Every structure is written in structure tokens, then in C-alpha cells.
Image (cartoon, rainbow over all chains, first blue to last red; front, side, top):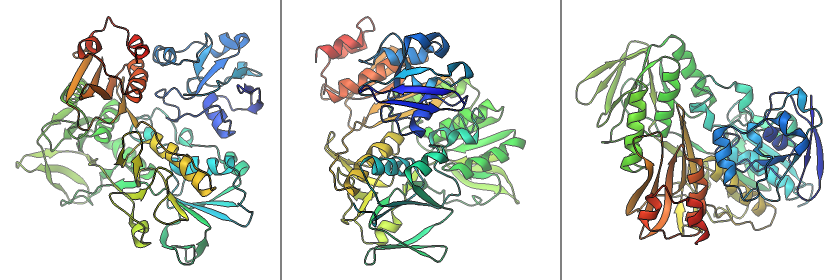
Length: 106
Length: 409
């Protein structure tokens, strides 16, 4: 299983094994990472699973879809590498990927 | 919060999962047990009528948390076990397996059940309600050999089910007793849109149509309407609303009024019992009125308040209600509650698949239906929370970026 490294805004790091095909959101939820709220449970409707892909991993993570991109536009804390973690499914190529979490999801 | 304390949650729901996680996050050191009458670990309910019914996602993908997550939290489950009574005097539950389960603190996350249709024939094979996993498994079984389906009820569950079955090549007829779809929850433009969307996708919609009997020998064959018309069908799905599961609470002398009554801290009228989710009637401090909501964000956010109360902390549940619905390629996001609106302002082209309806009450935005408009939705939430007063002409003018409206407030 690929290891994904989540880094919270306060610097806390988590290295977590996540099965391929599982979303970054679900991986965070299953491991009680506080920085992901996921009010809607992963349906791309609430914007509370926002994460920022480390710049070195942007290509591996891929680009946001049209709908996701519109949602992201409305997030104050967004960056150029922002994604909704429910829309990023873990692949083998993500071994070691670094994902930053915002200070707040609201 | 010593180790000898026990927290028990009734119901294997969205609320229950958040509650047990929040208990540990708040430092609860005692035992935690979830009692659920379903045989499954808690799963996501919204996809049941949407992606899961349509066959787009598998059962494993519905799990709210991997089972290993509950091991880490040291949460145990009693699955397939029904609570028969809450014995408040002795702080214990009477279970249908003949045993008793003691609690120091109790959380009621009992949810709601499908409202039943009191007509002849509802017990026939091929007749289904849609509330839980087993309901959907039954629908999927019927759908394998079905060419036609009748859906009774033109609310969100009925409409989502119509879309999911249509996607599987089943010819769907939908009956709505009121003059228009979504009458209870949406304005005319939103209703009209969904009527059009379903027609475009081949669904036959009959408004002002009541089912008076379901016919068949062992399996349903036809739906008889109150106007005498008969519709032949291979299966029937009934989606006419839900009833909160409050019986355990009532029998334990908790205050109940269209839901288990709780305050903004999710506390019931009993000092050691909290409640969260669809089963509660709760005071919403933002809207300053009592609500009973059927939504995931309500379940999870209220559960956080409930967990805090169990741990002796105070976390107020004061959130703007919001909802969503997926049908075909259309995503509806609803912010706020539109009850009592005086005006509905359209932003976008009402004949397209992308527009929003903003609900205004006395010059203030109180709610919005956003159809394939995620940006409008995100902004509507903020505008509503800011009690924004916006000129309807500007709101309807698409050349004005909505974001600029927010900065003015």
C-alpha cells in the first residue's frame, strides 16, 4: 500500500498506508486526522476536505475536474495546488506523496 | 471521565460514527459500545439512492470508516441487536438478545424510518421502501428482471431513485400526490426544472396522482390510482418521507415532539442522555427555531456537540442547514431553509441545466437552490450567514460576480 504523508497546518505529520483506489479523504478519516472534516462524506459537494498537494507531487495527483475546480475557487485558503481530497484516489505512483492540510476547513 | 464509565450509542449511523470519534478526541477514557439493529458496520446513506443504487459504487465503498479505525478507537459494536427499552432508573438497556447493557452515558442516534403507505398490496413482492442497505439490496434484486417501475412520491428520494433506475434501462413512472414535484421543499422554478429533467430522461411524471392499491398475486403487477387508472409495473418503490425513531425515548419519558427534543448542546431532557441526527428536534441558535433535519451534515455536526456534552464540555451546535441531491448529471446543492420566503430570485438561465434560485425573506437571503452551480452554493452559504441584503436586480445579474457582493457585507 502506498504511504501518504499528511502534514497539518501546525506541523504534525502522519505517514499512513492507504490502499490503492481509496481517496485521500477516506485515508485521513480512517486514521482520525483532524484536518479533514468531510461533511458530505466524499461526494464533492461541501469543500470541507480541502488539501494542498505538495508542489513536487502535483503532476502525480492530477488536476481537479471542472466541478471540483469551481468549488475550490470559493475557498479562501486555497493555493495553486489545492484539491478536494475526496476526489484524489490513491495510486501506486503516489508512494511517499506529501499532502498539506489547511488550518481550518471553514 | 474515569475508565469505569461506559458510553453507549444506539444506532449505527452517520451520527454514531462521528460521536464515537469525537468522544475519544475529547478524552473519553471509558468504554464505548454502539448497538445497531442492522448487521453492517455504519455506512454512508446518501449514496444508497444515488451511486450505489445506480451500480456506480460497490458496497465496500460505502463504509464510513474502515473497521480497523474502530479498533484503534477501542469502540465495540453489537450488530444485529435491537434495543427494546431504556431503563433510566438502572442506567441500562434491555436488548432483544435477552441481555442487558449498562451505561453511564447514552446517546440516541436512532435516525428515522420510511413512512409506510397505508394501502392494500404494499406487502407484495417487488414493493420496496428505500431507507437502508437491505432496502436497496431488495430493490436491486427486483431491478434485475424489471422492465418497468412505479415510484410513489416525488420528493428527493423518489426523484433520485427514478434517476438511478432509469440509468439501468428501466422505464419509470413517478406518482406525486401534490400538484408539483418537491412541493414541500422547493419553489416552483426548482420543481419545474426537475420535472423537465426527468422528462428529458424518459421518466413519466404524474402529479396530482395518488396510489390507492397495489395489485398482484404474490408479486406486484400494477398500481391502481385514485382516479381509477391502472399502471402495469414490475416493481414499486415508495418514498413518501420518514418518521423519526423516537419510541425508545418516549417510553423512557424523555421529551419528544416530532423528534427527541434536545437543546443546542444535543442534551435531552435526561441528564445522562444525548441525541443526534435525524431523530432529534433541536433548537438552531442561528435560525432561532426548532428544526428536525434529515441530512448528513446535521448528523455529524450535532454528534460533535453530543460527544462534548457526554464529556462534560460545552460545544454548541449552531450550523446553517444544507443539503444536496444527485440526479443524472445534475448536482443540486441547497443552502439554508427556505420556509417563509417572500421572493425567489433566479440567477442564470432557467431553461438550462445550470442556475440558482435565491430565496429572499424581507430583503434578506435565507436560502438558495444551486443547480450545477457549486460556486453559487459556496457563496450562498456565506451570504446567508451574513444576513446579506442584496438588491434582487444585482443578484439576478450574471455580469455581477457574486463574490463581490460578499465583500460589500
